[in-house]
Length: 330
Image (cartoon, rainbow, N blue to C red; front, top):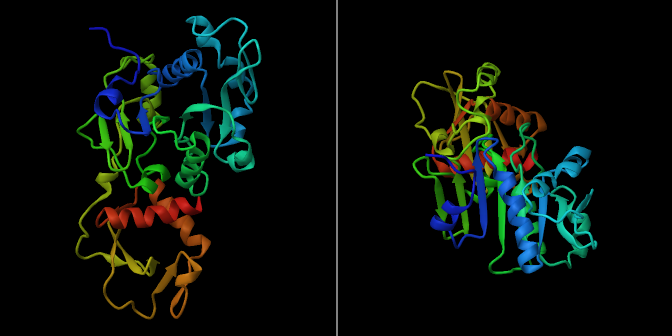
């Protein structure tokens, strides 16, 4: 049986009514290629444009990205020979804008000039490999979709990425995570769906000898279907651990951390905080008495703990509370 390159058949079957899709999986399975074709077809069939976005403007500064964007379209006959690219998008020979290039980080600069007929958004590589996200990333994405799509009921936003980590600011912000037993996890009350890509054809075969190199360098997670689930970060608080001297207050709730075998377990703390311990708040409104504003060094510590897999959480609410602190300050 010949496997197919990536396509949206599973999303159309299991989550047809969603507006926001997150599509993650192995590299080189055709995710970007499929949505390039989908964008060209949208323009030819309806005249509507696609906004192609990335996290940072510098990602569009690579000349090879701009020059190579139409290569597949020309190869497979999806575009006319006279179509061309500019640093701000793809154009027909007559100068009509087919695809607009835009970054999350600079979108606010263009907010007053979004009058074009954009029918869909494709967010390419929404999980950067260096895990450096724009501050309050999911808020930026909501602002962009609301402005660009102007509340069009049937418009879609597709967010594509290799599976870097389930602990990313978009999923944490929306409080969603993929069910490890399903290819498509649908959240109908939120209008969001996640597809973890499995069973597709890949340009890098499993028996490719280069996979030995990727595995040795810790790079195999990006090239396989192995994924880390946020749900795996939920764990019981072990007995006999050592209480962390720094506590966190967020929305009136105090969270404590317990060290055990090199792992910091976060939990709701209902006891009296000792005088030799510290309580840090994330907002000025909660500062007062023993509660002080969270210092930058502790935010950096939290990020390092997360990147090295050194944190676990009592339940999903605790997890989202702590991870949101990290992603709000990245």
